[in-house]
Length: 82
Image 1 (cartoon, rainbow, N blue to C red):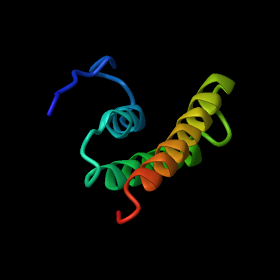
Image 2: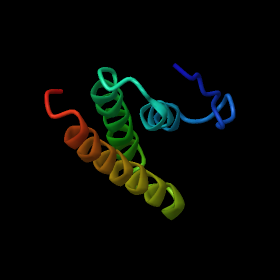
Image 3: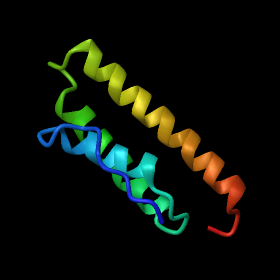
């Protein structure tokens, strides 16, 4: 299986690293866990920044959650037994 290197800088926030891992996961058995882990990290970060984050970060979190939702739907259609 192909191995991808991260496009993120080493000091990227944890939620972005987990999000990237989910998006790039090729193993359909690991994908649901990666999506769940990324979603938890995004929600945790959203709670942390509720009152003081920039609009750009709020948008990035919303975009990431939307992308994970789509990935989960597509994965479920391709692998209904998962």
